[in-house]
Image (tube, rainbow, N blue to C red):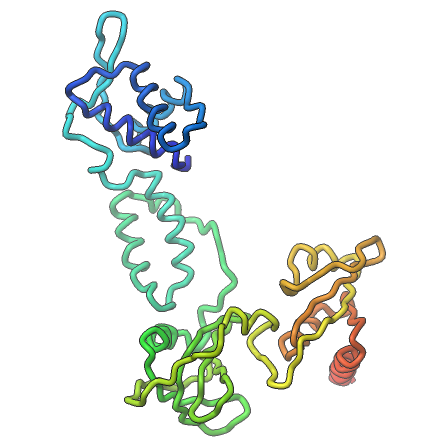
Amino acid sequence: MAITKHALIRYQTLDRCFRNPGRRYYIADLLDACNEAIKELEPNSKGIQKRQLYDDILFMESSQGWHIPLERIKDGRRTYLRYKDTSFSINNQPINELEAEQLKSAMLVLNRFKGLPQFEWINELLPKLDQTFQLSNQSDTIISFDSNEFLKGTEYLSPLFNAILYKQTLAITYKSFKSEKDSLLTFYPYHLKQHNNRWFLFGKSGDYENLTNLALDRIKKIETVGIEFIENLTIDFEEYFEDIIGVSKPEDGILTKIKLEANISLAPYIKTKPLHGSQRTVVDNDQGFVFTIEVIPNYELEKMLLSFGQDMKVLTPNEFKQKMKTRVARSLNNFD
């Protein structure tokens, strides 16, 4: 049972009525009080009926609510309700079981981000929730994420996050896949991005003018240095990644409309999970699904399209089509 805005208003109103020693609140009075509080927020609301009021009271009395110490006192043919202890209030109680379950579900999701900066507290808080509310009886995993716990470089996420946040210049020892030796870079970090379960750091490297990205799994060492930080004054990273798939953006790349065709078996997957935000349908029938995307062609795009194999065709532009054809031909040579 989720606690909605209206429900919260009703619970707070009932709480005030139950702990008011100066007035007797019968069911009709409680209903009027709740509806008045709701109409203060939404004048056009029709309010609630008695059945909803009874459900609210039962919830507040339950273990899922606040275990309120409610007593029902006979007054002739009518009954009024109040707290046995007028000092009691739901606002003075720890979170209830429902709130704890909702919080734990959220924490379980956040726990998948262990190792990320600013999330170290999660591993400490979950056991405290379990101990306080005895919620460990459900041990089955109910949600999983596509992640690689053994990926190298994630230990640098926290210091890199802080370096970006506090504008710290770094000395990074880096070894690319193309080099046999380590390189020592003076680096001004601006942005972290994850793609295909790998993390990348974007920033300015030394005197090099263009944006540089470093794979975290190739970083060997990070140190802060006392060199004045060069701030990013020109790049909006939301816009930067808008026209590409992945993380690489060719310096001479231009925005290109690419027409593609997915066969009938692949089409449903492409429709429900577009390749890019610019995806637009051209033809959609029993023969296949023709669509366009408008992106800057890069290595990640080529790899993604090749991963669809025979189920995907590149129709235009011809230059990009021939480039993909060459890649496929070279791939076939590996099977000779």
